[in-house]
Each structure stands twice: as structure tokens, then as C-alpha cells.
Length: 142
Image 1 (cartoon, one colour):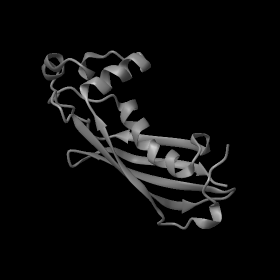
Image 2 (tube, rainbow, N blue to C red):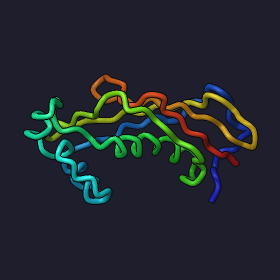
Image 3 (cartoon, rainbow, N blue to C red):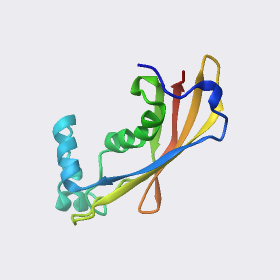
Image 4 (tube, rainbow, N blue to C red):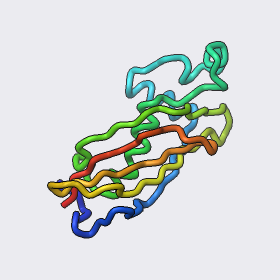
């Protein structure tokens, strides 16, 4: 499979469709099972607070994975992402209630590179705070 977006159809500044991703304690337990990361800061409120966190926090890799979905959905093929990196700036705090938390992600094409590659810059926030910094993906388009 290849990207469904053509390189010629994209300009610097092109905005990708943004998305919001809900995160609940159940989501974190499921992710822990899939990833093998059972650190108690991701499921045990008492422990998280004892180590100085405001509450249970989402896994960093989970937050990264949710954010890149904006790019893979836009490109149409997860394999079109050839490079991806972030800095973790703030945790996604997940309260123990029916709503949980939300990760809101926006993205735009920041540069057109050679060989049908584009650099996409992402912004991910939760509770009004930027949770990922320097979030960038390089994507090969059709």
C-alpha cells in the first residue's frame, strides 16, 4: 500500500484533519497489557500521587501513538511514515471518572522535501497543555 495523498497536491501549510482521542483508565490498562508497561503511575492513583504526579498519567508511547494517527489517517498508509519523533513536555493526566482525559491533535505540512517526502509538524494538547514538543513526522507521499 502507498500513501493516498499525492506530493503535488500538498503545499507547505496544508492542514491535516485534526482529531481528539479519549483516554480512560480502562484504555491505559488495555495499553499496559499490549505494551507490557505495567508501571503503577499508569494505573495506581495512590502510587502516582506518592511519586509527585497529580494523578495517573497516560503512557508516553501511548500518547505518541495516538498523535501519529492523525498523520497515518491522512496519508492512508501507516508505512508512509518514515521518521517520527517527539519530546514529552507534560503528562496526560487521566482522572478516574466517566470522562477521563482527551488528547487533541492538529498537524500541518511544515516542509516539502526531496523524493516525495514532506515534514509534518504535530501539536498535541490535553487539558489545555501541550503534551508533546518537537513532534515531527517525515512522510513519503504518492
